[in-house]
Length: 265
Image 1 (cartoon, rainbow, N blue to C red):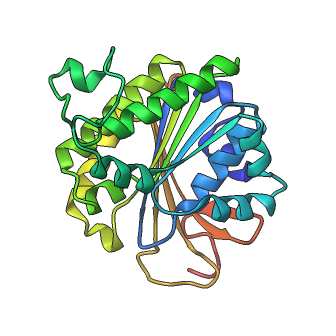
Image 2 (cartoon, rainbow, N blue to C red):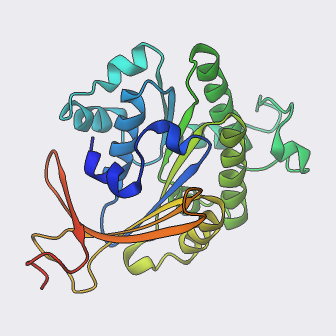
């Protein structure tokens, strides 16, 4: 979708990030364009994708993807894409009594750690089962994309439960040699304290981190925000950090070094 973005992230092919996890945070600006980018990137490279969204509908993502020549409905129909409505599943799990909740407890990390009544266990098991079904039918490593995990906090789930949910999912995807992409909103000016704590935890877990934030100088028509990128590079033996400013259009993104746009000089 945005080849310029992959260049900045030093992602030449999907093989270069197999087994890694990508964390995305946003504050003051909308960072969902990164979710659209990675969704398109992995589907075009024939990876099976489990896409969990707590924010937007399938029609929203399908409409945006069609602008870039990608039909999500066709990908879903041929079994390459599993679209999971996170809020709907959370609502259903709240309606179930413990005796009515049927989840697979074999080899489950929540159960192994004595958390068989964990509030997010049904959702975790559903996602795990969907991923396992995709793995059976495809030779390429699986992809898990979640947008946006901060919704778990705003729907009453505890900070501890949310962090455990993220960690177990990341461990599961990693065990399948797949890639997890998780997006979280930290609120305006990063004022959501619980979301900030979750992001800090993700920074310890995820080797590729992308922070999307607004300009410190305020709104600018020609510069929409800033990308702060941290990538644990096995090639360089240390974490590579970059800071770029960007401008979005309907079908492209312009990236430039911070301060080099004439609009903010």
